[in-house]
Image (cartoon, rainbow, N blue to C red; front, side, top):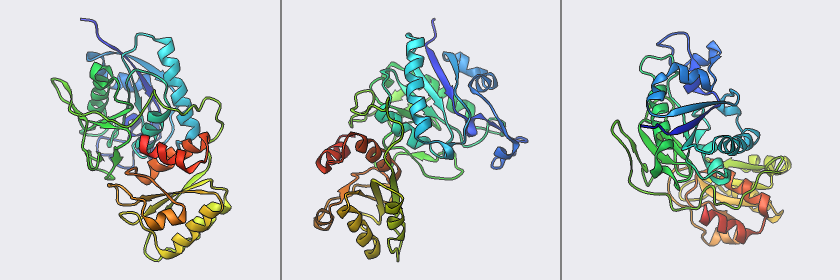
Length: 332
């Protein structure tokens, strides 16, 4: 039987790392040994059992250092891989877990390929005892090759679970089950016998989006102000001084900030800076009550602050009309 063809793009991260021994579970980055995509596939030859996997070298970069330049590269690379290999079933991107959810959501809004794109990472390096790297990679390849994954937008696969890019978030520093989808749960599972989906994302996603980053050199600056008891808005004023065009308020649940921060955010909104109210809670919707409307704030719906920042940055490449931006937060 002919196996599906899947491209694997490596960007580094724990999944690509080799520590100093099987019990080096946390300080492995100090060893400085990070594999490229082809080396990862050689390390885990079981990947060949489920697909013909094409290794695509990008470059190895720690995920806390990943931002718009890398996101733009990856979106373009996905498109080029599809051009070079028109019979691809799907694409898997190996990624560090620190910013995996942000890269996944950015690609979910910008990548222009019709085949599944799946992000995968690991909590333990490939050299570790009981590493999750190999199984996560095999599962991600199987999901990317599954016809049922088409039309789902960008996905994340770890710990046998399939998550939507818009909703997944990292919830624990070290546990293998760190990636979760608050409120709604997983889309499905990659089990030993089958890839099984049980629900579909309904928000608009790649490739059918209005965002075109092909000629974009840099995203408009959007910062996140994190609320805490006694916050006085100093961070907000610093963001304004730094040239922010948008600010995400990571407020108390269900969407409030301390008085000093509210004052600073209100002044920022008066200056034409787009302020979007999110929460630090990790789940649930914000609502646009009377005070937020009077202050000119928009709302992030149920996007967490880091994903609201991505959507607002992309929205500002289209325009700054509040009604248009609110439509985007309802759409994506």
